[in-house]
Image 1 (cartoon, rainbow, N blue to C red):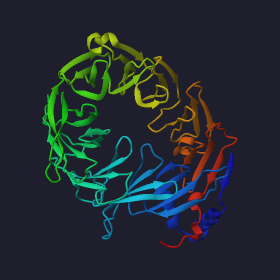
Image 2 (cartoon, rainbow, N blue to C red; image 1 turned 90 degrees about the horizontal axis):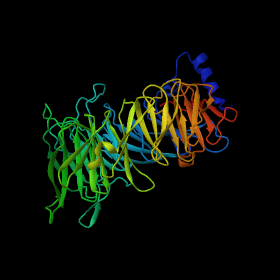
Image 3 (tube, helix red, strand yellow; image 1 turned 60 degrees about the vertical axis):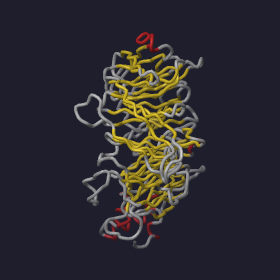
Image 4 (cartoon, rainbow, N blue to C red; image 1 turned 60 degrees about the horizontal axis):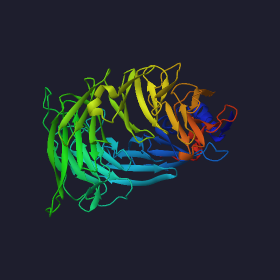
Length: 520
């Protein structure tokens, strides 16, 4: 393993340990890394205490242990990788002892610094993204550890990350939710309303919801209060929304209701100022069971809503006729994974979190054949997580040890055992090579296997793993492994032919230029 370290930080360390007598502010700051992520060819570090970001260049044949330092808005609160993008989202809030400047800022960090930022009228502490990563939803939840004593759960802001800041971006609203806590936000695919394609944001609270037209941010939201079906309390416990662009429908389910709620969009003409050119009719479908997941599919018989139940069972809901068909399952399911085979036939795989059995369901004639269309699949462990892979395959990790790759078309399973559990975030999918990397925090080795052969291999490291990421985005030229420690230590493995012999080690970069820094 080749070490590409810096010399200057040894001088700083000597000064700290021998001459200074106390730990310097810069040394303390280096320990306060709030988050790290690979963005393009750079590894980005965010430090909470001094509001600085550090960019470590990892591209090229001989990267240097040298960081580029940039100031960030105060005070960094939380970070999250933007979905489907090589960008890092950073939510900042104005400190309590500072009176000037915006209450909050959403910052988008790219490979070369701050790409763009959005000033916020409220210092939010919660961030959610739309499934495609275009929209960010910001809200506040009560936090006993915060220096802010008051929060407004009705106050939300929506940021369009594909547009610059403007008079309506972010879109800030005070929604009518009866002081309920925000549960989730779902954004529709494009729905044709009038002569325009629109995307609607459905904001779910416990028993109420608001729908906002993202194309017309000046128009008022549509709001409704739902009644619980079969629950002991009045709370619906809204959890999920699915959309039908073809029929302009929105289906809702709640954890505390045995009903499914159907919103049918209706066009309106000549709306009043700031009014919408649509509204919704509400139909409460009594399915008679508590649901755990929903998926909307178009079958040979038409549009059908599939819903798994605590039962255990699978419900097939025909909204046009208001009929519900129940299919019995051996074990409860909480995840619906639809897929099509080469003959374009529609199927789904049902899995349950914590369950050791999955079920294939053929959707053709399901309402008449029922249980005869179900084929059970025994798994080698209890399901912890599911990730979709190329070529109609699924990566399934288990709550104990090990993982499996399920081929949906052939209905076969290939498994790999592990000596220790694979927690959330321990698998990285390299779509370019159809390879899966195993990077378990606290271990001193990286595992990997190719989907075609399923032969596990590993590379030993000089230190334990803190986090890891693929360098170069979709090109994935290297695997960068960050190790814990004050000085800064990253190992780079060649993504094509990883080996200990060709690995590169970057050390000491968090002390790069320490003697050149003045007092803050």
